[in-house]
Length: 361
Image (cartoon, rainbow, N blue to C red; front, side):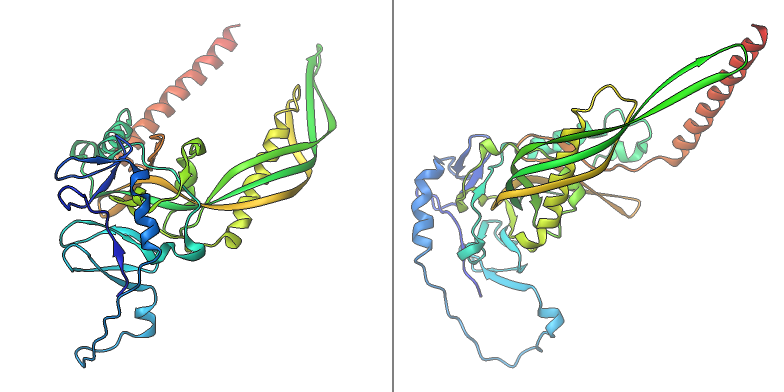
């Protein structure tokens, strides 16, 4: 078994949790509040703690196969002694027996300890409110889905992110066009002129995020950006209490390709915005060179919501700092085809009316 840590209330011994509304550790039993810095000594003591050695010799049951055992971890709840089962990437969770919040200290040892954390600014009620707001004004949303408004699961989770800092020098050539048109009594003319536009310069990138968890869909995590790094603080395990957390299972080296793609695309877009006065602008050649690149490891706050409709699971995500909410919704196919038929009929009537008006002229 591996050890877990819980922050205990000095007043009543209840399990403390980080309260995003007051930005302090708070006891849910006696409502006593504590500054996070006041609990920093806990982390220092934890670094000197030993681990239990609890061995048993038993013939009960059978052994897990190698495939079954891969990634399986179990921990002991310090409050009730219950066993908490998780996987190799579980960093913060809760006991299924007593509900107390547990932080898996071994996941933050050595090089696995994050450099920064952005604490949750918004609570569970805010996430529920944004979910209901997300359903409003969706004409093609099935009525039963909207009326029920049920949420199967909602949890706040600290998602591991790799943050990339770098300066970029770039040379980019664009193919641009301009057109002009005119007509005479016989013909209509269109002239297209082609230009080669060159740009060179430097761009600095700070804290380009790449999520380090295979459980989190990349498009979902990128959709709730940006996070404001100004709120980031030095990592302390106290911020994890009351939330779930995973350590990374995609390391920094494996995240470089995505970081490079994001930086290269952003550089081309920034240079593209300087090319004005053309009908079309297309990159023909680009050379982006990075230097002074550095990588940091951080935890960012995310609310995840899951619901099921017609046996299909729908996942939504909310930025736990800014409140940005994203997620796909089901479509009422009957409403869709009805709307499509109306649109086609209206468009056809407008075209017919336009042709009739032309004939009159």
